[in-house]
Length: 106
Image 1: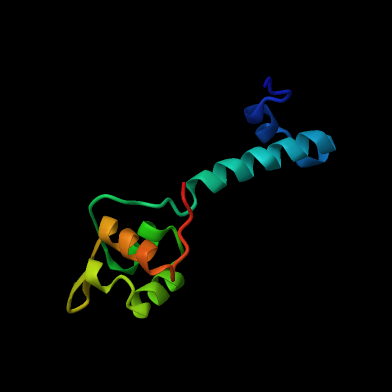
Image 2: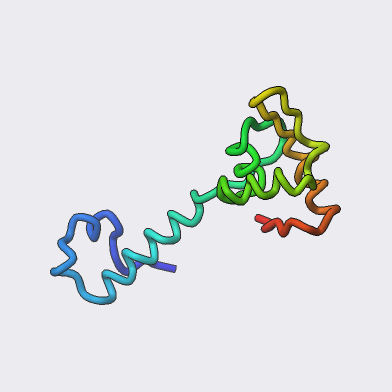
C-alpha cells in the first residue's frame, strides 16, 4: 500500500497547518510504532529482579509483583536475599500450566 504522506515531513509541519487526514496519519503511525516497543515479552535465559519478571510476561512492575506473590512461578525463581533470578522459559511454562496467568501470544 502506497503511503499518501511522508512521515518525516509531517513531523516538521506545525499541527495548526495540518489537515485532519494528515494529523490522523501522523497519530496512527506514532501509536503503531509505540505499541511495538512497549513491554516486549522475553524468553530464553535468565532475567533479574521484578523488572525481569515484568519483561518475561510483558506486563507492568506492579503486575509482576502480584505474579511473584501468587506463588505460581516459584519454581522458576531463585532468590538470595534481595537478588531475584528468573528462568524465563520455566516461568512461562508454569504460568501456562496453571491457567491463572493470561499470557498474550506474540
